[in-house]
Length: 438
Ligand SMILES: [Zn+2]
Image (cartoon, rainbow, N blue to C red):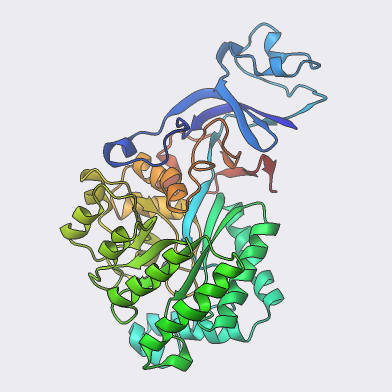
């Protein structure tokens, strides 16, 4: 099956196949072609180029179809051709860009925490909310009381929501189970989403999100449970692409983290870390030491973290939606880029600290609150998040051979308009695996 997208005003986010992430000044540019076309074959980007003058007549591939480009080489395709072996999509002069990759979410959860929202507005601290039964343990109680089928249905509502907002790949973490059975329940739901939804999904086992209620005051025993009972079961069922630890003040220590990452290494599971949200935790350094694919949050970092990340495989990932919602500092993205490092931006979609998976808003916050240029923020939300979830060989850019996960927008004056006019509905179509999801 071939699909030809034509009348593309700007084809944005073109990269060579060997680029897996962009670092430092490489993040300053987004390669574009004006007045372009793009050919999809069996869900994969097969070809793209300039439509100008139809020099690269894409219709040549339609051997049994009259070529609209052969009719005098007009630069504007005014009427869609009839084709027997291809589908044509008129982009009507809009942008075509890679779908967003969201490398950090917790979108499998039960219920919501809108009650805590009132508490937060009233000025209660995170600790006071937790003492009232709120926080991660509240989500764990709700999840425990929810069946696997119901959890899947509730989560799919959010999956459909983020797909419609242009997300084509998502990493989903466990961590609201906090018992062996409930963590497995969450990971099975993530697997079911992976199998049934058109979005690309990566699963992350975050048993060390908080100490389970039954282990209150016995943190090291809970860490042993994660290492000796949860991880072997997760590995045996092949449920996780990654393992994660909340390495931060009041949660898990660097020593706990090392213990879990060492155990995960025995099963060949790649680590990622929640680090430095609440304090300078050592989470970045332990992540780099264990070749974590990413260290995420980074609201509280010093120059030592920037130094630790130099020359590493680890993607610094910041979550501006969480900073926005909680009113905590934003990560120092600009300093990282000026130091020559890459930066990724993800949504952190979760019921407690970032109840939104709108990656366009994340891109806008990257510009508005972190002072990234629109190009830097675009790259941080596409190719660099693809890297941070281990899919940049398949997603995150316009590249021949990658999955055709694309956003088609209304005509826009510039790339900057995407984050600038961040609430204007500009998305016309979302294409996942070459198919319009509408
Ligand atoms: Zn998180």
